Length: 113
Ligand code: DGP
Image (cartoon, rainbow, N blue to C red; front, side, top):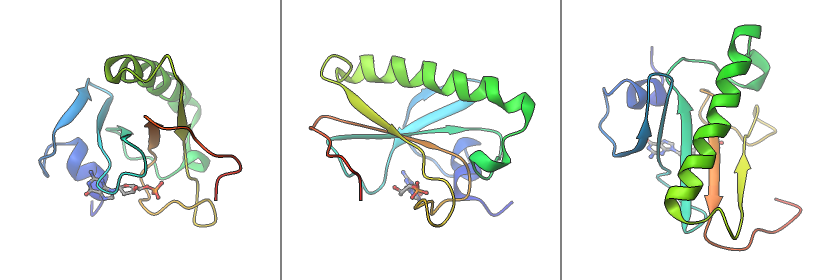
């Protein structure tokens, strides 16, 4: 499958993982928009939130558990951080393999752009 995140998650393209288990990987975004900008990506190819099936919702919960761990590891849990999922073209999604941005290390603005 011609999906960049499938290739990264399955080791066909080498990147440094901050975290890996049997379900997900986490690695730094190539275009960081915060001092800490990590992508948490399931190994299973799911296009977007709108393509999640019943059996995938526990995976999303697992991703938030991983986000908790990574935020602790990076030392951003105390000050706070942001988790972002862009869904679909109008939502700003550019890679059509579901992923969650973990952003921290600076104060976030609201509303987002
Ligand atoms: P989104 O716009 O939500 O689909 O975010 C996709 C993010 O993925 C974007 O911030 C850039 C990042 N990205 C795209 N290709 C690569 C890659 O090959 N390596 C890494 N580390 N990040 C990538």
